[in-house]
Length: 203
Length: 87
Ligand SMILES: [Zn+2]
Image (cartoon, rainbow over all chains, first blue to last red):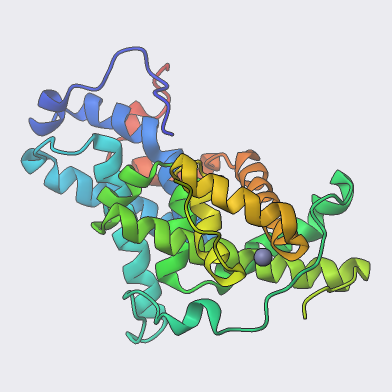
């Protein structure tokens, strides 16, 4: 959830009319959130900074026509998400598919991991190495799934906000989130299985 | 009337919504009745819940905007005059 740092709410009217001080307040209020979002989707500080700058340049340009149908934060997130996805596509040489992954991606993958690591002590679950693995697992997801899990589980947005940002149905958000989480669980299970020699009960 | 007991395969599909508390009571009851008797699905649901928790914890760690990144942003937007304005 985006929390307002400022006591006075931003004036959409002033923003539309190009009030510089008001725009500076908008940037100050949201730049950290936009940077986090971009860094989590892209995994690279330089790319995240590019997206951060492009987002506010576009926002500045399009504010006069901001229609207020969504909240300012949803609108900014939408610009930033599109910028990040565009950058990903460019880096992949234009072959990136943002469509939903084929149904086969979901369950027809590796046999499901049944490793009971959920009750390992906290220091075994959350250390520097695990954090690196959590990051790498996010990066391994297809962009279509990664964006949803970043918005929902890392940025803490609701299903509804996520559906508005991505312009997909709430059902599609839930389906992709489910696939993303199951995939992450699978990779975490493999990792903890190897790391701590836990038994795999998979048939 | 209670919902039919889901298979292990059908369970997988519902667990994310189940953990988000987005399923109707009778579907939850059917899932819980499956979980009571299926060790494998219990492990999957516990580790899925923990996966989500780990990512929540990970996301809560401070990830502040570095000061130099903010200063370049304000410069790019020609907002330097506002950079050190009091909050
Ligand atoms: Zn089962």
